[in-house]
Length: 217
Image (tube, rainbow, N blue to C red):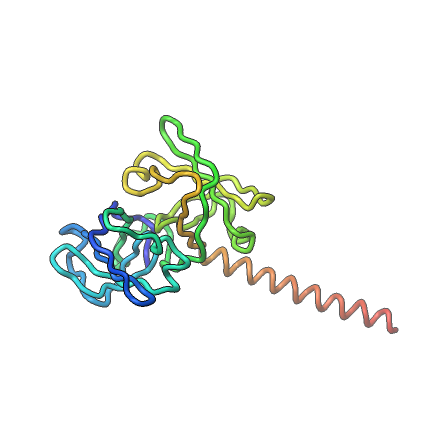
């Protein structure tokens, strides 16, 4: 489990292509490495990854074909910087919202508006997940907990607005039109929406049966 408050950008120092997977190493810092061991979970650009080796401040991860095809880890290269967060521990402050590191799909940047004090990005996603995204609701993008701005259902887009501090510790400042961003939905929004839809469908089914009974009578 993660909070969506990433700890900064860290460099990918090695990428090795294997059969149906990659092995890659990320250079962390002394603070993030404290207590980190093989088997621990770390969020890399919003993707839950398992530590397979720790050498000093460099940490090795594997990403399998499924992960590579559905997330931005499929385009990793040496020298690229990624957002990192350790999994939350009991007693840690949660300044964001609960994230699991389960990316549902990649959104595409379709508009970029830069002003003096903030950056607005408009992302396009599939309509199947846009139904779970709500204005002023939470969303996880590349592992960061963010608030959703306006939503355009016709074009299947939504906006996020980023302050200087967020831009300083993430890759969003470098995102251009056409770039991909990992999307994780707010699990609570998904559960509530699906529950309501199922409940309404059940009500509709019962009403239809009652109506058919009246017609027969």
